[in-house]
Image 1 (tube, rainbow, N blue to C red):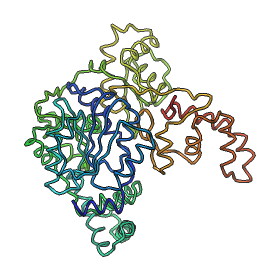
Image 2 (image 1 turned 45 degrees about the horizontal axis):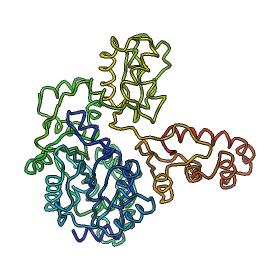
Image 3 (image 1 turned 90 degrees about the vertical axis):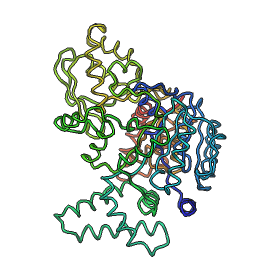
Image 4 (image 1 turned 60 degrees about the vertical axis):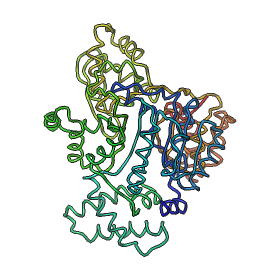
Length: 509
């Protein structure tokens, strides 16, 4: 691990939060499949390869009654993580600079959730074995684990690009120079290759995703000499000797919702063989990366959850109807549009009213029983008579990615106060120049512009709305020819932004 240690000390990994690894997400998935995971609000979480701690810090800030432990080999990462915990005044998180191969599992104790994101594919084989041993020894009987890794067949094409970049930059010593030169070389190959060839399309696709990533991320992930993708069937084979089994992906259900009905029907011919089905889906989608949820081998998994499990969750949605809903009480189908172009339809009045109600409360979530009562009031239907069919449709909307389920509901104000306070964690992220910020709802957001960043930093509880307008006016550089008009519009713009901040869970009491 020595080379890896020095590389991460020389080039610290970028600060990221990974909402897909949240205790709430892992607990929700386990509960959907009939397990009894720990309450996210009162749990113990371990992250292996925690980097500079940003991910765990985001959890610790939102879940003050839970405990978090982070382990990383790079001293620089851990020093920054400890400093950040002090700065954020978080006493429920601790960080240790350790080699995972030397971790004392008895001293660590047991955990409800264990996470290793961006680690498993980038370490030697003996380290991977030790990682799985830690899961085996430290995961509680009802515990839930999360492991991410590169997978084939999607990484077969990525390996072409990785090899080219490594070849071209082999004699360069400076990490950031290697990244820049590697991307420049790929651009040249993209230009020189046959414009109609599949080969060129592969390179162009990889170049496109590089534009969304940081140089540090590309250096450690793509230029690393340690980068081992797996076929899914290989990964699950590694779990068995450690008394572990595959549960699902963190995006369970949603990948299958992208498949055409005739493809789903063909997959159904595989019967109950979940592992074979997952491998088939990787072949169909060409998936290059997985974030898998794992549990103990003794855990009894219900692979066919029924819609009535919705009663055990909070529901949330930001989906909007694709057209105006003129008659809510009719059985006319309505198409709802969610993130990333996801679409799904509902026809039952109660289901349609429920999604519209959730959208009006986004990013808050609503307990199922409360949601159904509000939907019944809106449609004047009897809950007892209408609930079963509506529940079936809502469950299908969940599987399609239109509705999200949660095991707990974070508390945050839904209206901006006289002197609004932006989340202290969000302000800390902005001060650290993080590209994305983490709302109290747990989701990641990318600030839309400089005004959003400035206003969030100014919302520290010392300024009322007029003060925010005056401070923003003093700090923003307006074009001279537009200054007067923009200053006149600024109060209304800031008012709308504060409303948006409350809606997104960016403000705290």
